[in-house]
Length: 421
Image (cartoon, rainbow, N blue to C red; front, side, top):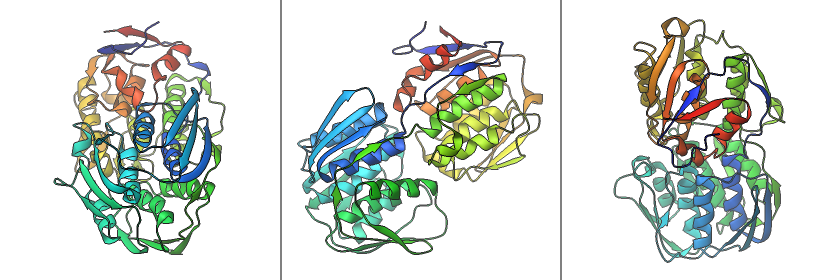
């Protein structure tokens, strides 16, 4: 059995049969990182069960510990958070790797710190935009700056935040809006949060944020079509069970569809509250996917669907995916490059759209080394191509640890052979 840690590359051997069995996706990254932060802002002890333990959540937990929050991990799926309800200034910059949720959410939350906080990340995080969030926080009176419009970010907090109205542009990422919403209950007075423009990437994740806030005692209500009014309630400690990760589930749904198999995830698609779960309805239509797929509201599922589209009977155009260009890497470009490694003409970029030609452009053997750009979703999605094509090799397989550390062992448990390459 291959274990991917510290491997330079992994080749997937097509199983040549339907994948049948059971597999458990990890806990939701989106919910886990929201819950960790809110538990840290709540006075008392919170228990988070079914949580994700991965690179992204490890960065969030480490940052909270650096600000004097006690975060315990009694087992592989539980966090116990003891907090005074206040974050204190860390002695060193907070290093957050390429964890977008941790970086965006903490940039807002540390406005409650009395002192200076520097938030930084790796070379990829330093290319991910954060200027719309910085602008919104400044309008609330927060002293926050960034030299490049990307991390590192410097916040000089006073220990408190004024209330009032804040407008925010969330077209690039709903995480900006979620960050401000989660800060709002900590303000001295009610906060009215309003979107500028109708566009928002990943609107369903705002609902996840509001649900997590409610679980920790916050009160937020719609005050208009694109406006929320949040009361200055603060947060109270809570016990929360984290649902499985819907983005991770898409790889297993697609693996079953590609091989004609059946994989029991232990949770019905309709029971997910995360927006990426809507991809299952499209996956169920394979190999007759629709000619156009609008991906703005299930962005993390687009790489999965794009690889599935390579085996579809007809071409598929992905639209509404410009937000993928500012994820862990430029995912539109990374997908196009990966497909080009498999076969010239298999896919192409057209503006911010991605057009995948379908099975008529597929070779019998790929002999393709897929560059992942340290992006977990590029690695996991292109691994699916290896279930059908000989010679698909994933470079930097360890990058899946960002959100799904057990991805390779999960495939192996279903009978997929992996070879060190």
